[in-house]
Image (cartoon, rainbow, N blue to C red; front, side, top):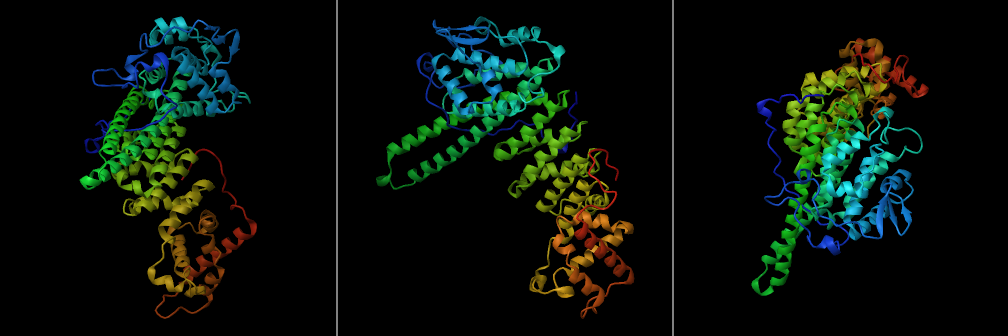
Length: 550
């Protein structure tokens, strides 16, 4: 297990998030016995949260007389129906139809539908055991999980998320899609009934704490995808709340004679409803975050840790007002020290999604100051893929604010244009280009149509020569050219400008190139011509996967 490192007191991120969420979403209110609870409040004051409650005791009735469960399958009037697991595994049905059928089943008898959903998660973990209606009625989740653990064949090692072959190729994406569609289709009523979501969250929280890797892996993925779907609901609720508030204020500000009191009452009622839904969704998300994420983001299994980091990156990007703060960013920062490259990679890609949006920069300032040095050091990561993404992240940081990176930080990236590994070199070349070559002096705008040494590229070519000479790797001009070829092709193929700098007299007030600088320019020019003609990297530059030596 990877312990979360201590964070300095000047980066005090341990406070809980105080954001509120909102929504409105689903088929229609459940009829019959499920309607008697009304919409319900998942965690009102004095009530336990979803992960604490377990099953809601006698919240559902017995299966109807015409329906029972044989060998884990529904049998209605002698006709056997496939279980959710089998339908999702086959991947031949439209997921919305699968979910809509389940919702109809839930409206008919929620216990039978939930039993199918529980067995879905159990079977997706590779367990051959089946939760019976009797077990569901009389056993707590912890007892059910213990019973399923006893029936689990761990010797096989494989389970659906790790199995190979065409049958399982799309299983993970179908599994994740099912969870997302389930929440989307239930978001208007069912998720607020204090039963379905409480049962599912409680089950997944229990499974995620199992010693059985298959249970832990599968339930963590399910819980994180469930959380992502809830974040989307919360975002929609927040938008609806804002719109309703604006409508209410606009109506209230009208002159008394023109004010529609009935509409004001309706808007007030809608706002109250949205706020209640928002509070419930927030409680669900808190239950998943505290019950699953905070334990599994440092799980012993790298793949489980990677799932957690990938999803928290999505939450912060999707609903930045609620999640893009230091209380959540700290988990990504800590995990950048993970011993496994795949997990470090997820941290970097999650951060890239945030830094790419310049509107979010102000919310990243404290994180950047705290973890910038770690990101810079990751440009030398032993895993090439990690090093490449670290450089790309620094390029985004550079674009968001040039003051953040020091000259030393930039120089640590510059020299990687000479790396033998092409993806690293190309990423460094783009960073170099953004820093030194992509900006033009406003005074040069009038030179855009000029050519040769009077054109806009003249100073940039000189800058390239100066950089090459200062790097003191004079035999590696081909490496430098190749590194910048993708992002600076127009500059590197401006041979007219290069010839002009070599053959024509300097302009008035312009400093002439020295012999050393001219020699360097000739070497660079020859390398650009060779690159254009041969269309392949120089000898010795490859695309191997591991062990960066810089």
